[in-house]
Image 1 (cartoon, rainbow, N blue to C red):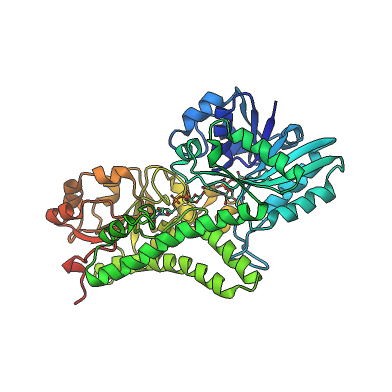
Image 2 (image 1 turned 90 degrees about the vertical axis):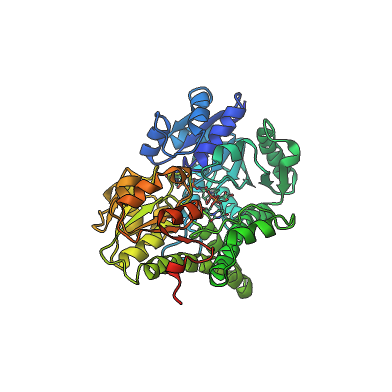
Length: 478
Ligand code: NAD
Ligand code: UDX
């Protein structure tokens, strides 16, 4: 029987291992973490992350062949395949700060693997974390020089492509599973062993094998290309507002070109999440270190446009409200970086809220899945500190200009404006006449996700800003 251990019980380690356990009942899967609270939550009825469908998957497999534990040494030493799914944050200090990936969590996991594995044995170490290209080479050196010489460590790159909010369906039916390995006999033996695990439920034709470096680089490239589509459409949204074109119509028109495709063309207040910005910065840094400044500059612009889009939105809100939001109540609907997750890492709401707070606004935040302490933490934490897991959400100081409420009607009561920052479905069902009646006039809505019925809202009397759409005459400067 194959035994699998996974170091890192986060957004990736937890769901991916739960899916492997579900689909491979004869394989024992143990998910490990140094964070005791996280492991306790995985073993409870209240999982540490919100992900539609995940409770059911975990309930079926947990205790059967899926286990969550803090006993890293025991389970790593027993495992045949060891996934490493630890965080790989952006460095906050030293060489490459603000760009390069901090591999210290990865390296300490590798050193621990080396110390606790005893031979003779053939151990497969799988890079599940997103890492800079060539990381496998460094990890291999750490394992070789610190481990028992009778243990053969074979490293594979198996990047994860799941998106939060749809993790269970993405894992159930992935577009592809990518496995990179060395081209020699040991490398191919390891690739086959991992491919056999996924083949329990993924068609062989969708299990793609490449060399190590292609797999590592493909992950960074996929995220950069996805983010680039959003920045491209967001840049066009600015032009639409100036010209009277409608970004949704432009997106639909270009998306029907099969060479372009219709997905990932929704203009937004900006992309967020733990991956896009971090991985592009990582790519930029790698290009710079290879002397490819033009390539680095090209990808850097994807982030610059994203920052511009968030700033542009803040300027629309303040400009629309007669150039001042000082002491005005503003309802913020949605703080998560996208719908169907409680994750706030790099959410565009951070920069938007900070921009409004800087101008004196009083924010009332409502999000169906985000806890108050996360909002306060995100709005007060230093850049990139969120991914360095000592960050104590609970101890974040409360910001006096921000209230987090549990009811959208309370958030909007007496407010001058509503800012929609996450595309939660429930926002479409709100009783807008009731909201309008309770708000200060003129009542503004700034739809940063284009999810509302703008014509109906205008009928009710709202002044509506819809991203990338012809401007409401009330908001025009001329
Ligand atoms: P996360 O922060 O949610 O989880 C990482 C976990 O690793 C934490 O719980 C941390 O305590 C644990 N950890 C760190 N060092 C450890 C050690 N030495 N021993 C045991 N546990 C340790 O991160 P995540 O979102 O799951 O991301 C993990 C990796 O996967 C990152 O490289 C990320 O870029 C990549 N990734 C993330 C997503 C996503 O949607 N979140 C998708 C694809 C890839
Ligand atoms: C992303 C990648 O999609 C996934 O493959 C990778 O494994 C991890 O990073 P994730 O960040 O979880 O996944 O969510 P995603 O759906 O990609 O959305 C990222 C951000 O882009 C969100 O803030 C979302 O709202 C925004 N977005 C997405 C847009 O603004 N417009 C779009 O058309 C799509």
